[in-house]
Length: 354
Image (cartoon, rainbow, N blue to C red; front, side):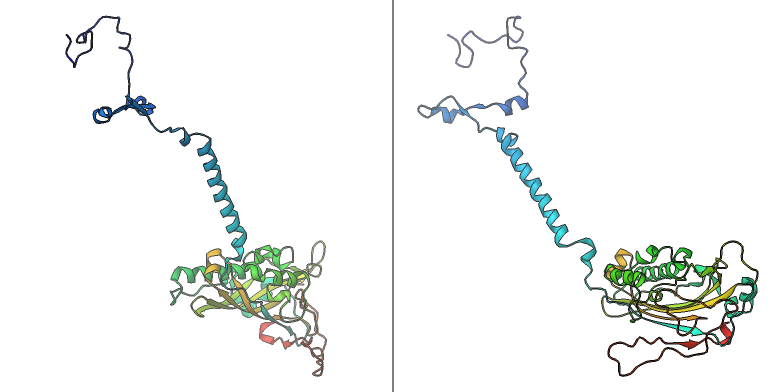
């Protein structure tokens, strides 16, 4: 009689003959885990009427249609959430404080006599601008340091952005001749874009929509640059205004060499100087600094030689070599009229700046 621990046919022969048809089968771990049947333990088999094996829970749901539906729903939910956040909080509307409109004042400076002419080099040699630096080299930054709520790097970023704005709005030849305004507009806070565009397209003498409040522009049909170099001198400073506002002020004088716009070669000695002083106040918050933009809060401009009654809301109107201003004051003002006065301010260009 065979032992109860041995098979009915006696102990197996490890080195049995080739008639063992199951020798080549290998039950690895993945095969065992995938089995749908599992043998009960000895204790479980002792119970009455217990089957020898039991079925394992099906695992097809993990990779079947139900799992695919759940995955699709999760993707749709994530996409819907992203779209909702984008619509409810657009990128450009993330500024914590709305931009305020620009306040501007433009004052033409009338010459006392005839505007002198000459070559650009000769005119500059006799002008106070002879000691000025050329172009962007004349826009120097002050030493930057931290404030209570802005780091040194943030202050430096604000100063560099102001310099970039001054270069674009005062020195770019395409901006000076009215060919484009994009280099200036791209640096503005979006909250000032509408005011800027109206000032360029439909300028008004209302203290808010004069083109010269934002940039220097000449009428290309009447004026051309006699020399590409512009002489510049000025100062820049900064201070903190509240926990979330950094203010930068700039005060620069720009001297341009102009001549009449004419086709073909121009006459020697028909150049003249034109001087623009721009005092600007800029404001930055944390969002402006992060997005490399600024707000122009106030603009005070003096420019000459110009005639006092000249309309400078759209473009500056220089008097060129040999011209002189009509001997009369600014337009009259009616103190009984309601609304803002349309009378322009006017000054006299001193001899030292001719």
